[in-house]
Every structure is written in structure tokens, then in C-alpha cells.
Image (cartoon, rainbow, N blue to C red; front, side, top):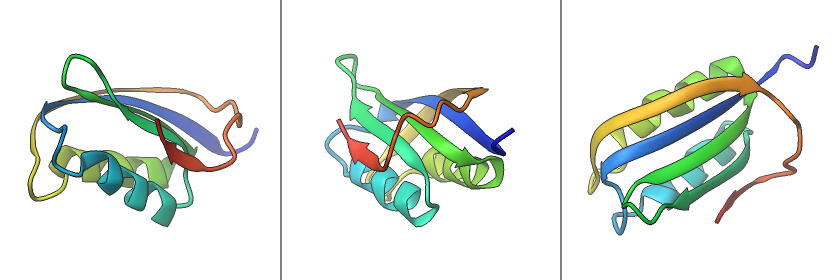
Length: 92
């Protein structure tokens, strides 16, 4: 057991064009997480992050607030088994 978990989240609201992906990138890197964040065609933002459960829960709380210019209406998230497929956290 690696002690790692995987968070898959979709964030809805005014979350594109407001620095949301950069916000997630900074938070994830600060928490030593790996994975990615991307804009989706429906206006939402999707992310997959792997790391310690505590760090992922901290990231989940952060994305529920978002950067000051964002309006987060809801976050749909789920926990999965970590795959360790990522070397860093990046933008897609």
C-alpha cells in the first residue's frame, strides 16, 4: 500500500477565464500532488490529483472556494485508487 489516493473532481460555476486552473496548479504543487487540471467544453473545470489523502482533502477544500474571481456553484468529486502515473502536476 502506497498511502496515496486519487481525487477526481469537476467544478461548476464561473470557473473558466478567472485563473481557476492556475489557482489549482499552485495549490496542487504546494501540496506536492501530481496530476492535471483542464477546462471542459461545458464550462466546468476537471482535475485529477494524486498524493496523500490529507493533501487531497486540503485541495478539495481549496477548489470549493476557488480564486477570488471565481464563483464555484458546486464540486462533484470522487475517490479512486492511485495509479502513480503522473510525475508532476500540470495544465491540460
